[in-house]
Image 1 (spheres, rainbow, N blue to C red):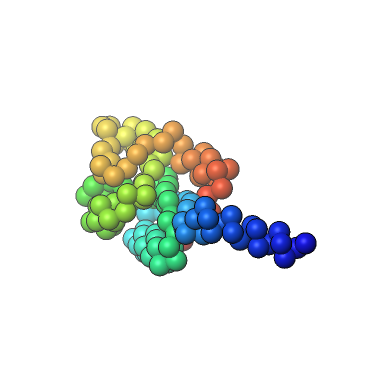
Image 2: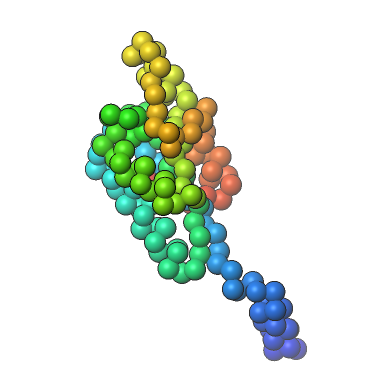
Length: 144
């Protein structure tokens, strides 16, 4: 009986192509330090995870969430990884960069003017809350 069920299940999977399609993985990457080494490690993690899953026939959706001092990662002229972010965003449409609105507001108040972010950044109300939401949506959490 088990063999019949297993064979039938295998036939259904093969017929529907369930194994032909790769899995989609979801990853949240946390950056809250104004440290070029941490920012580069985060981007290295993004590149390595993307490369690995693509080699397996899978896809991956990655969101890098920057807040606190890590928001400098997304500020033109201050970001030590600005060129990498621009290049990686062009190469990978499933990669997004979330900027903490709370941090942005506080930085703008301190600067006495609006702090401008890179075009690749999407402002979210709170970086910490965004990380919580992503984890509640089954994103794997990575902190380099």
